[in-house]
Each structure stands twice: as C-alpha cells, then as structure tokens.
Image (cartoon, rainbow, N blue to C red; front, side, top):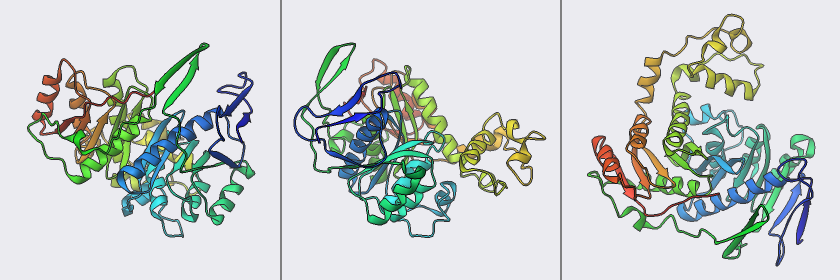
Length: 393
C-alpha cells in the first residue's frame, strides 16, 4: 500500500487528506478503526520515541501522546504498590507484564493530559496491556505486533472503532526529511543524534560530578522524550518515567514551571490523604482524576463546598493546607531533568530544585552558564553540558 486516504486533515475543512510514500510501501497496517491526520502524526512521532528508548535502555517502553507531544513516557520497570494504586491498576486480575507496566507509568504520569491519548508501545501489545487500555479514554495505539487476545480486546473498544496500527519495526526512513509550509518545501537531515552515548555526560561543570546509573538512565529517558516534544521543552523524570513534561512554551522558565507543576501534582497524588479520598463508587474515572487535581490545587473549594463535595465523595474530606503540600513536595528527591536547549538563567534551576531535581542534562552554551552553574552548586545538583540541542517542530 503506497497511500491511505484520510477523512480530513487537522480540521474538518482541510480536504483532501492522505498519507503516502513517494517511494516504496507504507510501513504501517491499519488493523482496526480509521485513524486521522493527527492520529498518524501522534502515532509516528510516538513510535520513534519508544523505539529509541527501548534501544537505549534495553527495556520495553511506552508513550502517551496528545497533539504531537508526549503526555507521558516510561520504561517497563515494576510498579510499587503506591504507583499501582495512584495509576488505578491495582485491581487488574492478570499479572502486569513489563510492557503493561511501561504503559501504566506513561499514562499515569499526567492522567489529565493523557485523556484521549494515542499510545505507542515498543514491544508486542499483550493481554495485560490491552486490559489496561480497554478502560481508558484513548484514540488509538501503534505497536510492532499484537497478540490475538489483545487484538480481540482492542477490536471491541469504542464500539469497534478504536484505532489500531501495526508498524514494521524494521522500517528505516530516508536520511533526508521534507515538509511544506505555505507552499514552500523545507528539507533537512533527520535528527539521528544518539542520546545514549556516555560522552554526553562527560562535561560536568558543577562541583557535584556524580551521576548514579539510575540518574543516567532517567536523563537519557528525558532527552529522548524531549527529542519528540514540541519545543521549547523540559522533562522531569524519576524511576524510569517522565513525571512532568512542559512542551511548546515560548519561554524556557515557563516551560520549567509547567513541567515542575506537573511533577508536583504527580507527587501530591501519592500523599496518604489523597490516596485515601472517599470517592463515591459511581464516579467516572475521568471525573475522579479531575477531582483529585482540583483537590490538591488552590481551587480545592470547588470540590469541597457544600453541595459540591456530595457529588464526588461519600464523606467530606479535609483539604490539604498549603504548608502540608509544601512539606510533602519537599520530600520528593532524586529527580532528573532534561532540557532541549540551554538554560539562559539560573531561575530554571531554582524552580527545578523545588521539585526535587538533583541531576540535570542540558545543552549548555548560554552567556550566563556561570550563573546556572553557581545555582546548581548552591543546591549540590550535578549537571552535565551535553552540547546537544533537541528542538523539534
């Protein structure tokens, strides 16, 4: 198959629409559903991310994409009891395989942003992973293969319209890529930089020069995630999964704040008081996620006011005070942070430190590198200058 006609482009008025190959066959098969223009943009970007992450770490990888940027990305490390509970997978009856754990982590990092996601898996989609996907609001999935049991579950999702794409894992694109904007063709070499190269972590200008093996893994995960995230972008990672991704911001400090706030929300969801919220048994998954986010925000009164809390809880919970939230966030440590370009000022490090960042990888090259280094030394943060910029547009 050389081309595939689509219903429309980014918007319903943008017709005609198709994907096609100028040479050779399309490396994908649509096994179910009718993916659209944005679905394929998400699918092909997310597939590159998980394929590269698997090659770099040797671990199964998953990504949750929305509007051509990842909401979450992770490798298939086992889930702790706490993570299984906050990702709402502790009631799954089948054992969670490594690829299922990767998806649970990718989806669970920012559940609000992952609502209606497109999923990418580096490995075969199996029964456990399909079981997790079945109960989430999602647009589709791309993977190199599917078990018969998984396909049966996915075929039934969304009344039979769920988008299921299989990609040839051996496909290699041409080294030159092109796109058109306003009738003008842009051409560039593909970004083939290797982000698992150990030399990326050799230029360490900070006093603290020690990166644990886990930190290096997490920084590689952050950099690969940023490679496929709309710029400017910053990614916070902990224990093999992104916990906060800031994408497409014009200002890097705004990006660092956005990603840091997401990392704080991820951590606050693990607060015992949040995990013990007395939800009504009939509350929908999406409503529960939204309620949690509001409960731990400054707008908590929106779900705890008289006449409102009864819609969500069986008993009115006590709010978390600002001091309690601040104290809990301060307990988060060992976080790694990657940036797709240099930090222009030390304010990015100041914000990162508030969310437990102890390791940083960024391009370096700012005229204020000295200030950035000084701020890292202030908090005993180890920082590597990779010399690699990862803009993605």
